[in-house]
Length: 263
Length: 329
Ligand SMILES: Nc1ncnc2c1ncn2[C@@H]1O[C@H](COP(=O)(O)OP(=O)(O)OP(=O)(O)O)[C@@H](O)[C@H]1O
Ligand SMILES: [Mg+2]
Image (cartoon, rainbow over all chains, first blue to last red; front, side):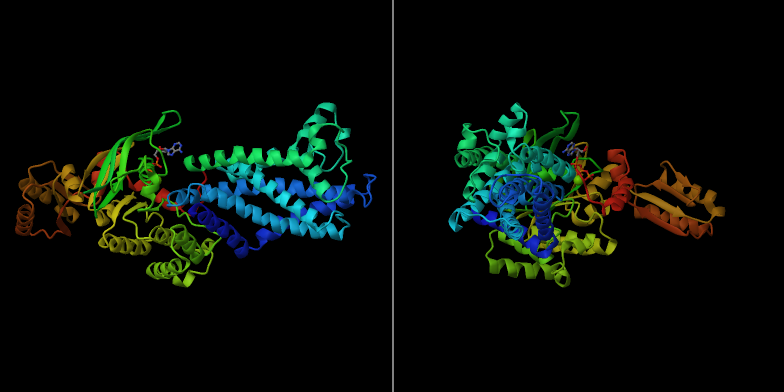
């Protein structure tokens, strides 16, 4: 029981930081909103999707997934900063559950995602995004995105506790996530890619997430998947498997790392 | 009873090329203060981190209040307080937020945490700045808040790693006062310092460490004796230097040291105040009025120098100059 309440105290600390320095929220929101607007108006005109409602219907799930995938970066940088300031050492000298600090952090970053997704959803609506699947499916889609962000956050824990400098954390996470989001169906059809890249893109968790969300938001996924491959036929199932896998691997690794990190 | 015991601790870094701890042994009697004194890189922080469950030594044994630190860190964490070399508090949050957070992490109820925060802020003269982000605190205020956070549940055993480094003289005095109060309250304290005066002032016993091992220990008096006995020191006007030297030779019999710049003549004496009175009488007979005359016991600086072969003071300034900086490791 203490494990949960300890973690929630750490989460609360993070939310309190947001309350004390509201710019933190502002800038977490501005970037994704900017992405929505840029993609919508810069590429939106030149990409013909054949979908009713245009590119923005396909775009929004892509940007949602990209944004939550980048949760990893916030988690990593936050933990590296805490480590540098000696806070992690201090937490480790307290009689609290061994997983509290990292759980609290991932929950806190997940909570921030709620705000970010809401802001993006509203922006999307303003520029023409209209999910057609009904409230339940749309809600499920957002839950899906939040859980994916939470899972990715655990990769960030491991990175954050493994590097020694905030700048390294920033770069390392960028290198980890950026190719993942672009080697996918998030912004353009995978069918235009060279054959080997297509395979990677199809099996990429970002692609299955994007395809899954498109489905949940009421689109048929006709955006470039090679019909017949397992992940593109079962994007939701595949995404769930990926999320479970990521958490099953990275939660234990991260908790272990936290308890051994020495500086 | 020995509340803290460390036995033959070894810890090396970079595949053995840096030996942070090299067979370190120490113990602290219940309710007393051990001052761990050592130059930069001596292994002070490493020692504290091992004892506070943060670092696994390569080998050795350590217990705190009878609990094995390596096998049972969770139990140890329940009874210790730690304030590290650099203040470790959340800079974005206010002093109040921090104390509440740490209070809750020590499993106090919301109400208890609040009460304790009020008390501690008062005790550390931080009440007025409680609602300001730590970012805006001075170094001394941070340090005090950091210490306050480690005292939330009145630990049995307290580790303070260089608690006054970077504080101004007034801040240091205040901190000493706070620490003395804690010790009166019965806490067992292990404190590291580079300030010899501080060890002298606060510690019941001192362990001098260098290169990861204890090279001397005892009360400050025994350590000083180890280095040598008392010295007679006389400062006179220039024209009396030669005559004074003869007088000192008569009462001392040891090697005489003449410092032209300070106009000081000094020599070891074995008879203490008798030698002093004798010298004063002889000076008076010659009509010499000394500017200063006295018996000096060796300072801890002398102890430090003779034991470690390097000067402790050098580092102090360097350290003061860098306290403002963030550390990056
Ligand atoms: N993580 C690490 N990696 C490599 N070397 C380390 C590490 N931590 C400590 N050391 C080395 O171990 C030795 C002891 O360091 P320690 O921090 O215990 O010294 P200290 O007595 O606290 O010094 P200071 O007065 O500067 O705080 C030093 O030579 C230091 O460089
Ligand atoms: Mg140190």
